[in-house]
Length: 310
Image (cartoon, rainbow, N blue to C red; front, side, top):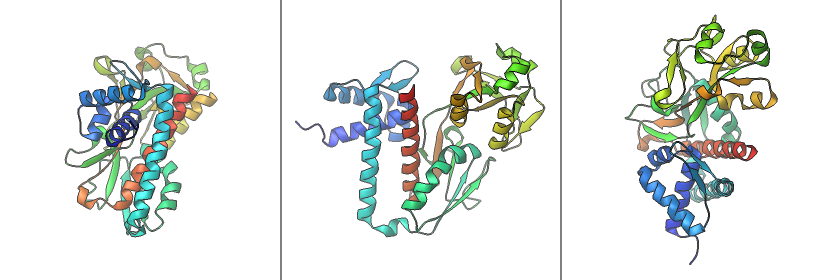
């Protein structure tokens, strides 16, 4: 019996979604099935391949070494299929006018900047206009074709396409700051530190969410600096001006090089991943699918590389 048939192809697509989201629930939402059905799908796939692909606990899902290799190869294969289908459909599908996109600063840094070279190379006939804006935006009223936001901030009447899995938020500071002010040992210690506070798009000051589930707490931290721009906040943290609350993915290079350190790691928090959203499937620009594919592929490659390094 051949390994690849229609059923196995669907199972492989489900496996790829689970690895991308690091979550059965997130993958189930994307695919429109239940988490229980996905769990059954993975058991069937592992039985068919006679190999363990995922390590599962009550709180997390992570690919095995074999699963990492398979997921990477699947992303390459699915990308080739996508390219072949688009070639067969003709170039006109990707040479249609303009896409106007509204995104927050974190998504611009993490997702759009890495994707732009590949997107412009593969869709030379599409003009992309990007507005980087952290405030809540009605994309329809303001004339945008689509937006990117954290998944829990997307209105329910929108079509939402997940781009990443859940994202980890951490507390970080420079070695210089910690040498001068000491390392906090508890969340109460933060009240005696300088913290780089976050201003949301609606001008409210963000209360840091620390920990997960029932143990999560929200803190209004002290600090002389309140900033609504990611790049400026990161510069302040790197410059030793205080402790910041940031996406771990934004400071991976700093952590690897020792320029920043995570403090109170037990109080890291897992939050919603990014979604691309738009008002109606009928209004979806053909090149949006290409942008989604590029972002997902690059994010998955980045995540798999991190897992292999670990």
